[in-house]
Image 1 (cartoon, rainbow, N blue to C red):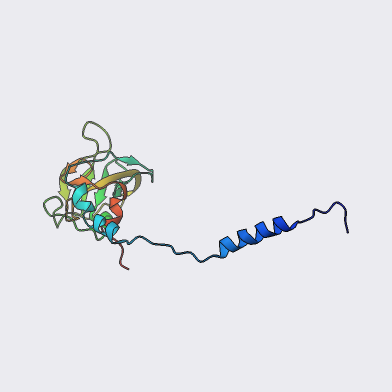
Image 2 (cartoon, rainbow, N blue to C red):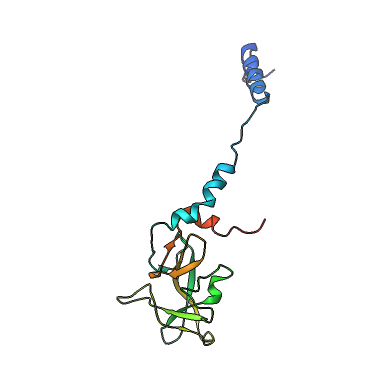
Length: 170
């Protein structure tokens, strides 16, 4: 027997058995129902759009908390957003006509973050490429897009509310 090896006395062995036994004891865990959270999510968009709000243009950062679309830029410096940028999210015809394919957006000057000039019905310019600007979408309580940035009505949907706007199919 090695004289330097530690000895284990009866009291230490009893303590170890007690600790092992406490971790092996059956446990009853109660999980909270998700129904309360789901009920809150159902009214999230309506609550978020009760007070009109907006958000500034974002410059290439994923840290924002609103629904946004990336602007395109033409070689002449014009920034624009297309109908295709909205995907399948419904768009109110009071803001974006059914024939509109794209719209100019100001990224500088006194009217920054606003759409301008006529809504375009011509094809989206093929020389428009992705820019480093993003613009927030504005929604009504029904989940329709009713504006962009400072243009239109409705509110920007922030914080975690955007996740319940149009949840993905199960």
